[in-house]
Length: 450
Image 1 (cartoon, rainbow, N blue to C red):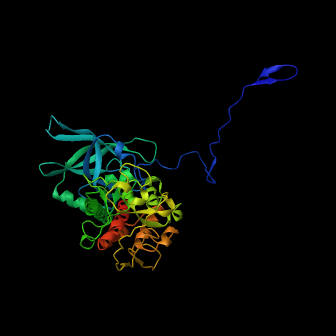
Image 2: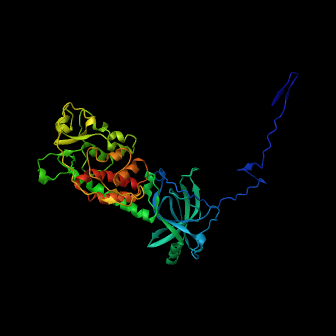
Image 3: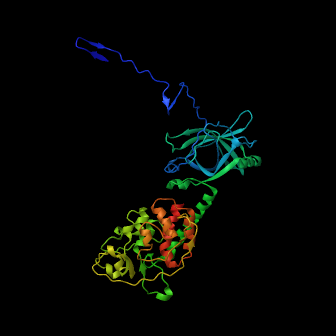
């Protein structure tokens, strides 16, 4: 650097600062600069983070295998699986049906001296474990034979914790009955790999009990999707109509329509091929601009829930003949419709009669994950004022098991699978007119719990 004075200017070299080798670390003064922490020999990751946004972008062909992961500590040495011994350092966890994305197909090579074959390949893993050299998987190789493939190299494809892994593997040997028994005795826990849960951010590894519940939820969802629209579909109006007893009202009786339920059913994807639900306008206001209970459920937001507690009344379709709107409710074959009076802009209102809900005795549920020792009815009889659910729910609490499930859903908390399945079971025993409104709400909880 330059050093200036009144008489002269001189150049003074700057000496670099001598590094301190023995700085205090976490309040402990090291006696030497020798690194005492050994290098890690095994990759461990005890926090299983869902790998959403990864699986759908990973290239390669899907290959379902049974993957075996060694249960090791941070500094345990890596080793190959020994088929002759059953020792504590060979404890395994088995991931059934894990998906590899194969980037390099199996390459078969034969040794020229002893004429033995070798099988090698490469794939990408995107799930909730960190693979290590020495992990292995079992897969069929044809002719009703199974082979054990050992992971020979692992490359992490990102510096982030949530990452994919590029692995290379080679076939060690065919799995004999003795080897299969050794694998069974060394396996201390099992997981089921469910790839589609990664799309929604869920954990892709499920315990056997969780997997059985997952399958039950899937069967319930398929049942609702296959039956709901068909049961309440009206071919003449091409939409869903409130169920009524034709023996009482006759073929030319009144028809009852709730546009807000129909929009909700369409929004949640509860449709049937060939039966596109018609949404009839209620002029002059756009029905899509009317916010209600279904708005909160669709947006999964409970901030304005109390303001959605509005009076809902039945009107003749003549009420909405305020303008010539194409395919509107006023010029349809429907006679009675429901609307929220606070959002009604028609100068003339023609009140209408509505079919009363069939009474039923609520089913009490004693065990659920709510307040300790509390019992709740699964469903309460429906009303239109307040609209479908109770005042307690609109005020931020719950009075039934359904409302408790929706309370958890709106607050973005996990909904136990047992609650969703119990609601589905009880809902099938309710009167048909109650199922008309309750089934779509249960459907939302089934999909959310899964």
